[in-house]
Image 1 (cartoon, rainbow, N blue to C red):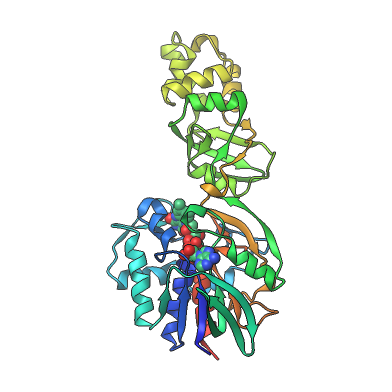
Image 2: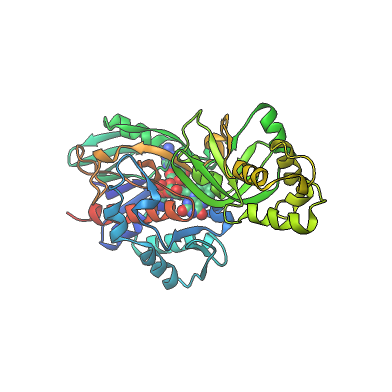
Length: 394
Ligand SMILES: Cc1cc2nc3c(=O)[nH]c(=O)nc-3n(C[C@H](O)[C@H](O)[C@H](O)COP(=O)(O)OP(=O)(O)OC[C@H]3O[C@@H](n4cnc5c(N)ncnc54)[C@H](O)[C@@H]3O)c2cc1C
């Protein structure tokens, strides 16, 4: 055998698995078709990489089997990754909601993983086309730029389909299909909503404005910022909700959910009853949004013209502004791919395929998808460590 372990994909999960397995003395080769390792890490978190979340737990992940991620996450949690980051002298900060970012640059995380791989004697081969994967006696055979290579264990860490421009291919799903593994249907997650027709024209008129909101899809809600765009809706609350949205279903917007707007307007009415509704709403919303809301809610006239009942009705509409997206921006801008290799086919302890000993799937290609906020990297690290530890042994 040329190698103990070959890993396809030098992304977050693949590099972590390689560094882990190499430390046990295994001969490891990482292959990637890209010209540099960790490209998604480099662009993540606006260039500062939201590398984990302090509060990461199984509830922050979507999967057909919500229990699957528990084992790996419990053995390699956020503070284990922070320990590695600290050891490499990378300074970091909590931005909000437990989201940890590099102070300096996402490139520091890539440099750290490459350094860990070097210490563990891992070989890395970039610009490499992988093909012809086959089972081989005691392991696997594949072609790397047409050169045949053999290994005892094969790890698939090719990521999902999101952002093809960054090298995403869906190759991991093809490998899974080749070995007859079930794939949970994939779709874009953590992605902006798009709209059409008259509603889109309205949203365009307020593009660029952001407002604290609660967005609900089905029974799941997220409280974070909402951003109006030229295509529809974006911002953290929208991205989060998109992972729970079913095509064709409406979503519900509650603007300023933490403000008792009805009480505010009633108070304002006592001293400034002569002002128009747009001006009254402008106290709480950007002017262009206040203008649109006045039209949408059909609440012309002065504030004093509105009874308590009318104000309550108006605010209740603002608490449940229903609209139906025509779709999402798709894989072109999605941060993640929902669905993937069915977790029922994998061991939750090792990420090894139950029916194909020696074959492993880790990271985003697996049907485990995190919320926005550092959870997806935490899954990449945790599944990488679980697999790297197991693949290096026996
Ligand atoms: C814009 C953006 C920002 C993000 N920000 C964050 C964030 O701040 N925090 C967070 O937790 N998550 C973030 N994510 C999600 C996160 O990047 C992914 O969940 C994570 O990178 C998945 O790790 P992975 O190793 O499974 O896949 P990837 O990191 O995608 O790595 C897969 C690797 O496989 C290689 N590959 C693919 N096909 C082939 C092939 N055919 N042959 C050889 N190699 C191949 C790719 O080149 C790539 O290097 C972001 C995603 C995007 C798109």
